[in-house]
Length: 532
Image 1 (cartoon, helix red, strand yellow):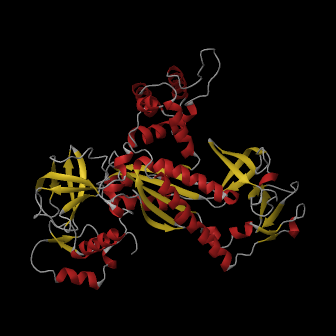
Image 2 (tube, helix red, strand yellow):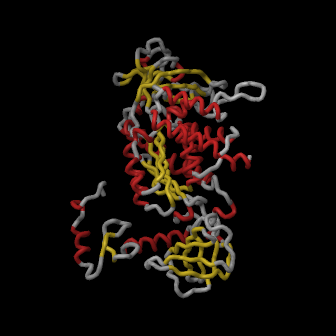
Image 3 (spheres, rainbow, N blue to C red):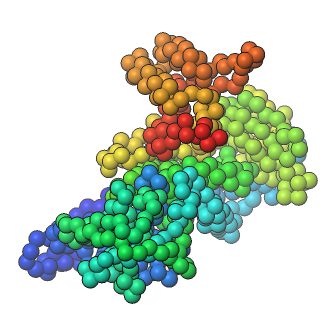
């Protein structure tokens, strides 16, 4: 259905259902947002039936979870990974012609671009689709438990024997509390036992004799029971992988993962993207977004946030200047550092074919601003000049479409309306910088209290004075230096690498790093130093 939905799109079929429901209090189903349901019910009959069918499918392959309670991390938080490739100009055929069939150094008129045939367009689509369904799927499988506090409990399921067996509904999840932590259960009528369907890190050590209080799904009341026995679930039901892929298409990817693992997963997706699409990454951009939320946040709000991210992230072609261009030591890649105002991007462009010996003269080209007449390898296409990556020099100006990254924490459902693409979307290159800054902070010797004091002072003065003011820049420099994060010296007076620079503060990178790691992921400097 078209978004946003309005009454004009409501067909006679849906309208008729409201005329035949009969007497009683009825309201719109919160799941499908279309059908009537009785007041106080959890969902309409159609959605409840779909849930039962989903459970039957899960029982045939229980290793792949369908329960968001099992995906949630030890802080009871989940992340939705949002991704897409900027494919518009590729599927139109325009960018397919930026690759060559025949390359003739020194003679651009004899260079022959690839023909955007239907077969080639299909290969573009299939290659991007396989990236999500194969490469990213493998990344999710490897890193889904990153950040787990108790690995033995993270992916385990237990069978619990209650002292009451006649009051439970089959195929209905029960939310409860044990040991002061959250737990979700599913009644197994054949076994006369509950099976846990939540991250057991939240509930802690579950033992016989403990009391679990659960909420009735359809009534505003609670039921308590005493655990008579516990056992590890066996067979396929015994363990699970805590992630769920919702959609995998080249122009849209959605997957639910534990919040604690989201940054590590996003970092690995970026690395694989650079590895597989390195020769065209300046023309085939990747957008990655992370929506962090509490386990009980309505999924309608989460999915709406993802839609806003996808709609708001514009992957546009921009003019950048080459700051540095040099080959790698093994001559397999070309390093390009580009700048645009205060932003920086570093490209590692593979310039050899798969055998590692043959020069790649056909793929790694950049849209060039100006006259490329003195370059050895270039060609012209539709009024544009394209120059080979190894022929670029300092101060050259090129057109690229940068990859982008963003994140948002849904503290409440209204937070999604405050998502601002101009403010919240950054370069994908910022992701590893944010993660490295946190690693450097862990090794700097600063305490959690000291770090929060620095953060509070800079945030307060930044709002009062303005981040671009000279007074604030001077304060940032002084504060970071006193905290031992900038212009550091060792015991012998030798200079040490900076942990945080005044530019990191002014650009907002420092604030984003702390928001991600301290506030959203709830990490602590002191604990990490102790572990190391």
